[in-house]
Amino acid sequence: MRTLLLMRHAKSSWDNPAMSDHERPLNDRGQLSAPLMGEWLRAQKLVPDLIVCSDARRTRETADLLAPACGFRDKVVITPELYLATVPTWRKVLRSLPGTAHRVLCIGHNPGLEELLHEATGRLQEMKTASIAQLDLDLPHWEEWDERQAPLQGQAKVTRVRDIAQDFGLD
Image 1 (cartoon, rainbow, N blue to C red):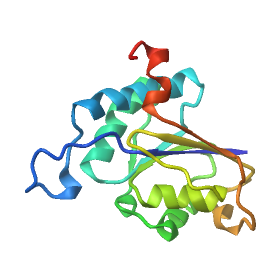
Image 2: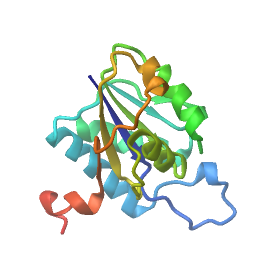
Image 3: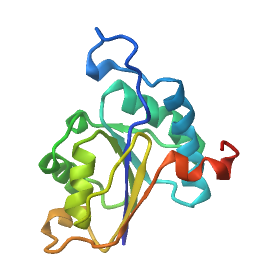
């Protein structure tokens, strides 16, 4: 059994229109929601064995704030291919995950995350900023990801910041 946690980066800033998309930082809301989602992962006993994220500034900042909040102590793996990745790129990255990692958190971008989630579950699900989708997979090895013949109907649960804010006293 493997658990894949797909996270869209926390809310980013659009204050500087001249800044490249790749270099956009988190805004104040994003800086609050990333560690909150980390605390939620810890409370749900979903601390990842591995965190992989795009090399965009907003995903790296999300990982940097989330990791200590959830209790993740290892180095986050920065994966440039995940910047605005398409589903085939996501599949390639997922198939290359180490076999020792049973619970993996991947931090990336839309529309690729929503498209991957749709492919995996057969359902359209919205991934708002800082949302985490949990997929429990009956895969002995990550490299078997795209060999599945049927979608994992009903196997994904998407959690958003607003879903947990009250639990952490932020309503």
